Image (tube, rainbow, N blue to C red; front, side):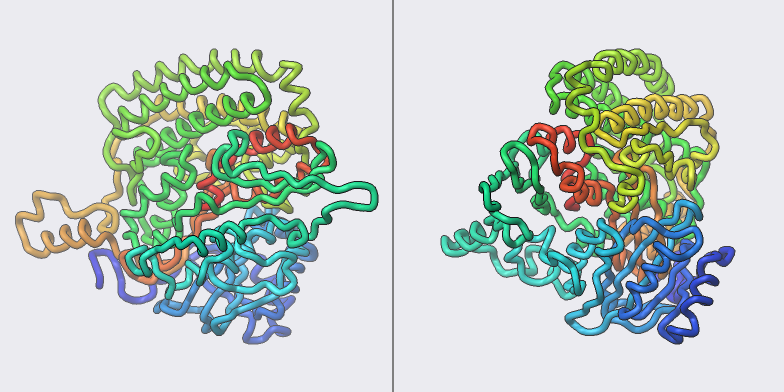
Length: 599
């Protein structure tokens, strides 16, 4: 099936300058690995190499520790079920592919390392000895695809219940409840499910005690206000001191990546809103940037600026919720009410522009749903005049407060190196003195035309994370002000056949245009085959989409890399040695959303 602007054949990759790392890897491994080493061209220009499963750990070790200007962060790890994919130019045969996405800050460059796996029970060595954050990523790939990682310390399901049958992101796993047997919960099954959820310390390498005393094991959650949602934490305590923590996630898992495979490129947009449900249209943006890159769509300047303005307003809304609930967690009640009032003012603007508040789903492929309404600039301008004084009040009210400082200074601290090892991005990374911001380092949607600063702090603790986010709100106000003052004129959606149906009057003139209009609206666009990734600086850190198109009306694979997933994985590391009340401060300071973790 084709539509205007689409091609049934593999689309050629966008020409890019050959990255230096590809030559370095070819010189180091090309002769040794022979045909097992292969370079793949991609639409997004990210350097991509294939290596044999038995050599993957060695190549990754080289990239992290030996190569000049290394790749210290494992940004993402995922898999693809290739068995039904038709367009695989420049790729070796495989049933499953494991994809490592690495990030080099010195190079300001990503690198994909791919491993081809065959058979129904694929496996390859674990890289948990190289990156701490690989623990959960490998468990997720095992849970969703059935890929075994030999040497992993605790390879069990992480998002699905321990009793689940099958691996949901395999192509042969049902996508809808109507494709499964009717659900029945007998008394015996209920007892078995309850028993499967029992926490056994020995399964996690924990001791129940030592020669002198026994440890206490405490369940925090999944229904507890301090966990900000359905999150369960199993605590190992020595008195009130935390010896270890085991996060139990997945209660909010809704199969977002699976749903992408049965939605059209267009109809999946509202689903992205629900991933970080405090981020609104911020979730739309990386998905659409990846789609637009696949399709070769250029967004008009006015639409880019509107997107930036809405994203920064949602950043303000999300940070206000975080700040109010965080200080509530450590004992201050009044600020949360003040900040929710301020958030309502933002939602009044969002509602006037989009017609909805928390989940407008308002961005579109190639632009936005419609132009700004009459009077939008006065509405936004009034808010820009209102909020700075409120932020000054909050700073005076909270940051110098002795109780707040006692509960946050030195609590949950980590260094820059530890943050990178655990995959921390966003305000959490900038709170330990590293001013990396994707809006500055890799400008998108016109951020390079805007003037703003990247706030940093040095403590790496709960207090530093509060300092960074408070100043980020001021910088967001600067950005929104520039959007208001410099909003370009012109179209709000690209004039591209994969983004915009033919003009309605033309559909009444000839049957071909009418057919194209009907197909575009009912089936959605056919995006050319290829792979593309896009990452933005979202409210909680780096949010990225890695999309695989097989030349259909829907994604073949849609990987959602969320910031909260690696951030939550770090909680045990930064909580050990603290007291139970400190854990609530640590959780609050991270600014996570459970749907962002579980998807």
